[in-house]
Length: 423
Image (cartoon, rainbow, N blue to C red):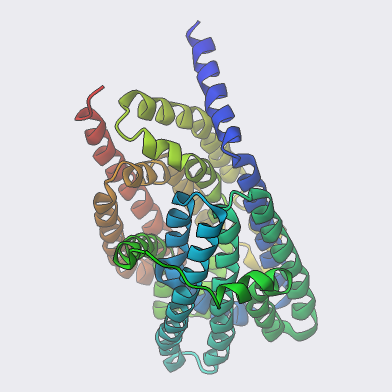
């Protein structure tokens, strides 16, 4: 009888996910991740370790700065646009925010270039890589803005279509250019891909540049946007510290080997995020409902504990063959790095991904920020200690310890919240 109840609860959990159109979000993100992985596999096989390593160094910095996309205007558009009822109000707000965000994006691109150029002291000609990523950063604002524009209008089909078309076209262009022009062909493909959105939807962009929006609380908007962006920034910063420290303490070949070893495990992290982000509005509305929160956590674990166990077992069995099979024999010997990161990602699925988002949903974003900052300090300290002794394996161990620690701390904080919550 108990088993039947547990299964029924899980079915309800999955039905809610479907009703929230999570399947559409899942499909577009899944295709995006698969395309990115295919692109990476081809590129790794077509350019040298040194070239891929130098690209990875700048890509890691790019990955951190892009979390500040428009200094939070994209997140602000999603929130405040969703709160408006009429199409005209949504359009006017979109128009107003577009200009604000574009100005901030130009500043962000300049800051990215300034920080990334410090690598020029160690790696000559890396400024050319930086220029291509600067073009991608500016284009990413247009791409993200257009996606958000359709999401606030409830047009998830259009959102998914844009994502699939742009990423598919980008894959073809990137592979062709890399095949004919090598490293710089790949970089050019990266730079122009987000700009493809203008060919399909440039009317919306041009209309946005000539509209105004009245009666808008700008201070409230920026307060929300910047806080959301900074929280995201700290979370993503953690994922580039290992790459940064390897580049600083070792060399670009070590960076390339490490990056290839963690590509497959890291690409699994989007799976739990799809469920949580899709259900986030409902979680927020039930932030004081102790029964619902327990229901959500229980059914989340029914789904992701078995998934994590299967992933860990398969990862251990395939650790010595997965990387050579996918990326080539030159990346053999990184099996333990692959498995350690895979184990860490599974722990992250069951702890930090879940409880970090729940903390934000129930209004404990401040606690979340403290955990994120502490994790960055921990990761940096462990990297300084372990990378000189264990090379790239030390970076993997540092990341794994940090993932597990921050996940456990987040779960403890949320459990305390539940204890003090009235039924």
